[in-house]
Length: 111
Length: 115
Image (cartoon, rainbow over all chains, first blue to last red; front, side, top):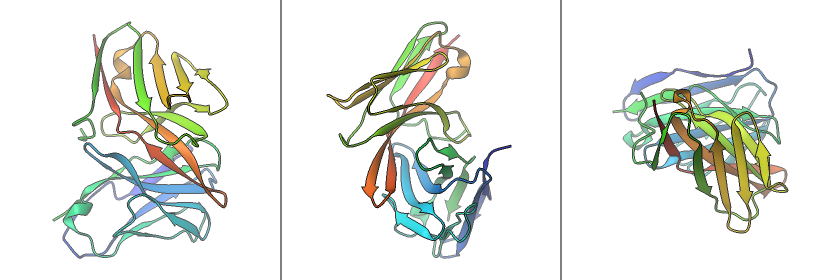
């Protein structure tokens, strides 16, 4: 089944404790992206990647890192999480010129 | 369920009626537009797309209209069903150079279908 998977689905952590949210897709898509979704603000892009070893900042990259060492994986790294990063996070992938497919989401709470 | 529906414009429609959801996009250089549906507790799901060289595109029970003059996009759902209840987002794509592009999403509209 073609899909985008994210892990974990739910995470509660404390300020300053480094964490990684994994994202994987099995559709051989070139483009991958991370979004956060907050009430009243909609979906905002954090980082995106056009292909392996190519990453670019989105609209809200501060406090996040990403890497794209393999085509199928695009992990999101929070080196020192803070409470304002409490949010719902979505990973998405697409072929270069078509619609994005979204993962199921990761609900992160930073205490 | 997830709280993505808070603070959103809401459209309430009687089952069987047609629904029209509107979206204003921001950049006249955007070349591709997408409508997504997001049900409670799930990720956004693709509904229909349209390229900037088109004015209208039809799918199964859905039609997207694009008015580039006023930078407006609409999604029409025919014979709305309870399963259509969700938050609907439009997205616009803008190339940022060197083969790279960004998708920008609207804030969304919550559609509630009254049985």
